[in-house]
Length: 124
View: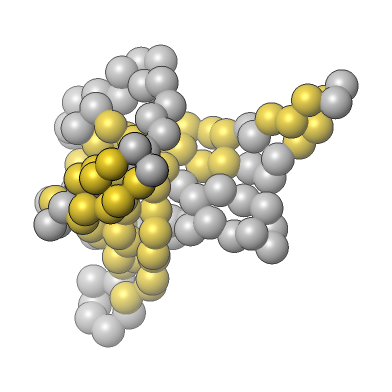
């Protein structure tokens, strides 16, 4: 269902590969229709000091992937408000006729470069 959903960029990673002795993690950027809502920030203490990180919750018709160490796969990342967010949890909600995936994301400490197209999409 498209109610309240807008286009957002999701970066989906493939398992790590090795080419000529160098490791790389391939990825594919895709557009997902989702509702993104901001949540309360979390505060973490790192070796460099205290860091405040933004959290968001999303509602989407498509599955969102979390990190899977067994499959050697990184979690999906969301480009939102010109920052990358990593998926920490995702579950299918089937308790209403509006079947959807509810996911939570946390702002990444290691910010990759922005998407080549800037990650801004016109809404339909």
